[in-house]
Length: 212
Image 1 (spheres, helix red, strand yellow):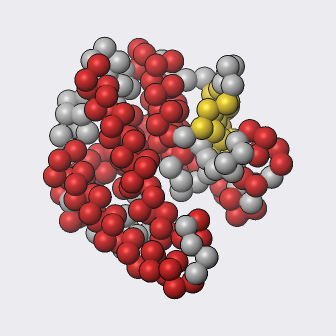
Image 2 (tube, one colour):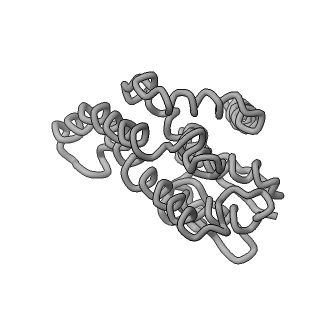
């Protein structure tokens, strides 16, 4: 049995979706950021980074979204969440997920986590003001060059789609109109209507409400 640690509204949603699409046996544990549970001694023993997601497996603890998506995909190959039999396409999938992790997520974090990079209030405010442009530039690139359609990898639905949907949820809060990117917007709407996505979002909302 896998144990999955997540926080509502974070990048952990991508891995949560992957677990559901894979049909994996797992237990979900919500980490309440409002109570700083990610900084508790027990949680830091699991993940000294103090972040989500975390996946506790029989072999040990895994962190970082691209790693979790790869692990879930390879652990449950029948779900076909990654093109495991196509070396080049698999590399493309990892390329895309790495871009979301290393560039798009960081562009978003400059708006809400500026203190990670600067102590000066003016510098933090400058990062916050720059976030809409940076996020817009990232999604313009995705729209033009990366989203092959109907899914990120073309005809192959994959973890890339779960990850893209997760980060696209942040655009509104970052001051970016998703409708600037018609293909991304269409992808987002299709994902949002998928029963698996609806179920996971409902589960997360219920878990949050239960501790409110």
